[in-house]
Image (cartoon, rainbow, N blue to C red; front, side):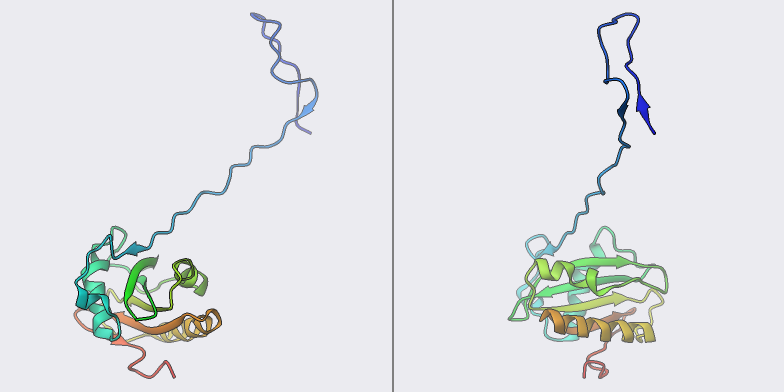
Length: 180
């Protein structure tokens, strides 16, 4: 058992730091605070025609205009971004969910939908890059897309598309038929 005794300084015998034989509790540091940031359109001015997100081309154009300048974006690693949309399919903002490695990214529906719920999103568009430049979706991309569609259905947040960005092409999983 951790105990302390009364400590009396020879210089000042009247000062005692703790009562005798009291239990010393271990120091427990609080969990580290986390900051989630949705980059709103106020912070990244966007032309009126780019605020609408109804096609994969519009989502890819938004990525090129804003995500590439994000301070944590690394073109050498896969980066997953979620674009938050309102009921009129206008972009309210975006957030960087995860930065992975050169060929893998960790992604869970909890992280994808966390800020979409906080921002009262009606729908989202998911986008990630392939550092190889090839925009063909992998089996893992297809699997996570299906998982996210099911999670969005439970939350009543529609997953409109999942865009895989290569260099210079992009591929829409909706156009490939994975959203049926």
